[in-house]
Image 1: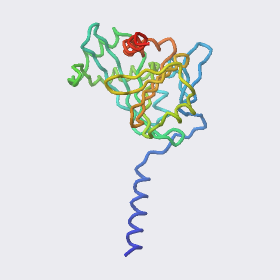
Image 2: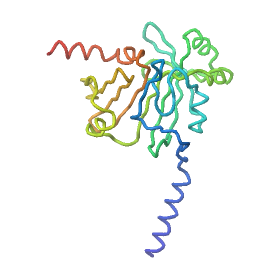
Image 3: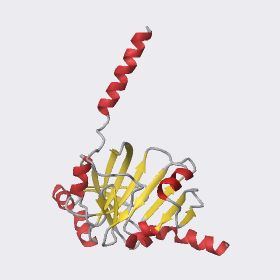
Image 4: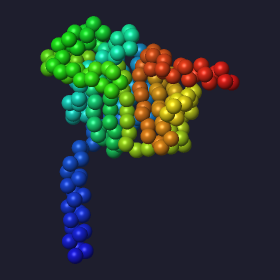
Length: 226
């Protein structure tokens, strides 16, 4: 009976391994805390260079197409953005989801929105559009603008400090309790909640003010309270 249970457990575990995607192991160091800048000041992480690496190149590394969608905001001024979502990617044996935005001008995105095949309403009031296949093909050659890295592992403060170093500043969202570890010179924002869930955002340093603009009221309130 015990041997039968153990045998079933082994078979079940083997089945899980078969279902797990193969980790990316191509000789390139792709660790989330290894963030550099090239001679143009562009952020380099996971073997990608923001503003230079294309979506097609990301897909080739991940061996996944990802889910590509176009979003439209409702706040003025209305903005369009396109994101590619990659689920359960293994880099350096670390499992995480990736959300990658692309560098595309607003006029081009508006045209793609008008050609969209299906529009969905989001709970935020914004809209998500399923893109026309021809527009998807066009977007594969566009460079990536930002990367959001959502690791499955939980990180404590000590580990973040050990891997990423001390931030230039920390800001806490009063409503959610999320603490943002900010590294402007590296284009890096690590948002951590009380349970250790983390979202790490990478942008080019020149784009860092736009990334952290929603946090400015918190920064102003904090400065006022000092």
